[in-house]
Amino acid sequence: MLKAILFDMDGVIVDTEPLHKKAYYMMFDTYNIEMTDSLYESFTGKSTKNTCTILVNHFGLSATPLELEHCKRNFFNGLFETDQSLQLLDGVHDLILDFYNNGLTLILASSASMGTINKVFKRFELEKYFTAKISGAELKASKPHPEIFEKAAKLAGTTPEHCIVIEDSTNGIHAAKAAGCYCVGYDSLHSKNQDYSQADFVVTDFKDFSYSKANQLLQKHFIS
Image 1 (cartoon, one colour):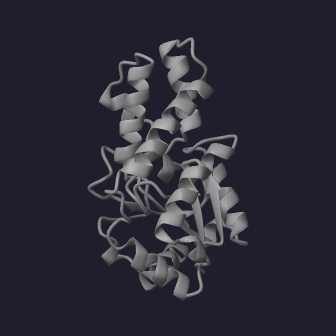
Image 2: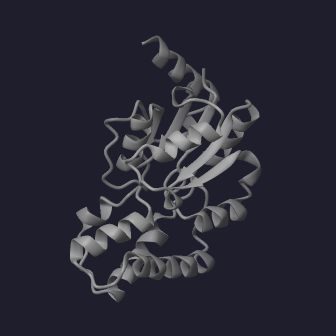
């Protein structure tokens, strides 16, 4: 029985990736980091904290992960306040309403910082629909580790097998499956070079997904 929907945020609810990318590359310039596309794409779904730790170790930097993290966040916060292009992704508001009006528990489980999550929720008035919000930046492990979705299921008052995760990244999909959740991969134009092969179901347009479809998918999954 479907009881909860666990939403990722970046690339699922909003496309903050362009702002994150700008902020990261401003930080890379600050610390003279020569970044490749493939290495950058491998960070999708990981928290800034964990990404900065990887960068320090990978490039042998003298700066600390915390210094890199603060630098990147300062750039991002500036962009968030000035860039008016940030909008909810097509169809996601109607999807949230559909789940909410049908009595499902909605939990936000994102690798973004809680500061960024709160900014997005305030800007788009999403707070009333969600029972809880989790920031991966505040957890010990980052996606693809399942900790964030295990915790989200507990906050929803249920177990992972009664939850559907909506994710757009390879790391997030692996985390959802490792937690024991049914995973819907959102393969949108905003998702670059991510692997959806481990997702239970893949959708390219939220207009093709709904409460009834989610129920149908999970029931079929239990039967099989």
